[in-house]
Image (cartoon, rainbow over all chains, first blue to last red; front, side):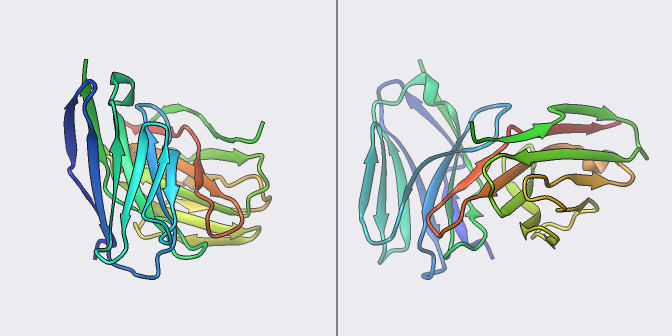
Length: 111
Length: 113
């Protein structure tokens, strides 16, 4: 059973547009929801994270929206740039247990 | 500077050889992890450790083994490499507390010919 479901698998967005990646989770005990960004040849890097007691967190052009009742959270990238082209992973964890990752989304921003 | 280091970055090796992938971190983290990343991107947990002399198998069955003799060092060993072991291997560590994420190394790209 996949505990964190991520969609879409791939996404193409025009420069300046909004990129949206969605995730859904099953375990209501999860209390930490990070997003990771991975460039080719590199390991994933923590981009932004949210706790379930807030509905939104914004850091620059990156925003996480969190819907606890629907058990869904999403990453919005505003004014998307070619440098944002990467693979994005949503994730979740309970306490300091292992972090569970989604399957990833390949994002390509057209120049 | 606190970081996590993996060596080698790239390795091409013949079938049947024994190999060790190195992972070291300077952050004093107790929790460390090894992931195998397939070409389709997905991350598969193969081993983890919650401290010295503690090692556990992950969700994906792997023929590799790990050891944790020192906090900062978490090497992964393949006794006899096979082409099916060709993959990207990522090491990560996690700080203390429930709201800390993983810090990943840059990975080792292993090719077994």
